[in-house]
Every structure is written in C-alpha cells, then in structure tokens.
Image 1 (cartoon, rainbow, N blue to C red):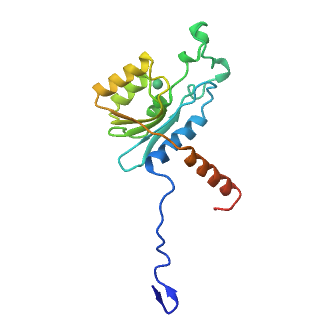
Image 2 (tube, helix red, strand yellow):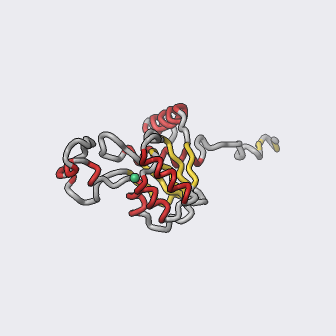
Image 3 (cartoon, rainbow, N blue to C red):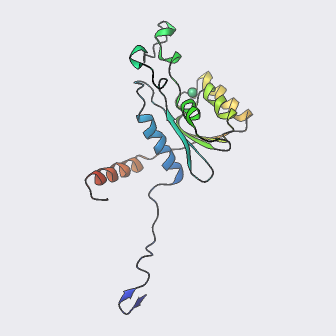
Length: 184
Ligand SMILES: [Zn+2]
C-alpha cells in the first residue's frame, strides 16, 4: 500500500530459510566429519536440544594432545591389533559426548553414519532420545543390528535423513558467492 509515494510494507518482504532444521544440523555433522583425519571413514555428529540449539559436536579422531604420528590409521584387520586404528580412534559420538559442556538428556543427535553399539550405549546412558542418520552402509552387520536392538530397547527413535545434491550445490554456490564478496 502506497501512502504519499512510500510503500509502508516494503520492509516486510516474505522470506523463507534456504535450509530446514534437519538439513541444517546434518550439514553441520557433515562439515564436522570433514575435519577427521581418518583416511577411510570420516564421521561427524551434532547433538541438539528441543529448541534447535546445538549442544555439542564431534568427529572421529585420536586422543587430543597425543603424538598422532605414533598411531596407525590403517583399517587392515589382518595385522596385529596394535597396528590397527580401531584400538586408538575415538568415534565422533563419543568425542562429542566427552566434550559436551551440558547435559544431553532429551537431545537428538545428527550423525553421518549409523552409530556403533559402543556409541549407542553412550547415547542411551546420556538420555538422548533420537538418532537421525545420513548413511546406514553397514546395516547388514551384526554391530548395527545390535545398535538398533539397543535403541529399540532403550526407546530411542532413529530415522534416516536424505540430503539432496541440490541443497549441497546451492550451499556450494552460496559459499563461492560469499568468498567472492557477492552475498556479504
Ligand atoms: Zn561408535
């Protein structure tokens, strides 16, 4: 509506976020995974409360402060256990739980790979109520079957979340525009 040539509604342009909450936190988990040094499996996660506030995030890695050059990243289970990464690496969920600065009770967790049984037990012990995962590539393994059984017994909901390539392309385009100074 124009009054004396001024549109009084001009500052109330309808706007919509380009990303929903599920996508927003899963993309954060994906970015966290990008920080992992594991050459074969990079996993990231984000714990979130009911108000969509982030509580903690993590990725799989070694103990903070240790000399990582003395530790193997190899995943060959045919060699001595001491020379496999499995004895040393801390999973993303365990890392995020260890570094959380507040209670995770009632939280939900976005994770790029379905949690293993050890992390599932940690998730359950801390009262997390929902697991939202991107990949379930080990769904036929005994480990993931046990994780799902534990979640069902502990009344933890779990659901898959798909992230579209269109979303990643639009984020990529936005970031490029941002560093080119177009959108900031
Ligand atoms: Zn785990």
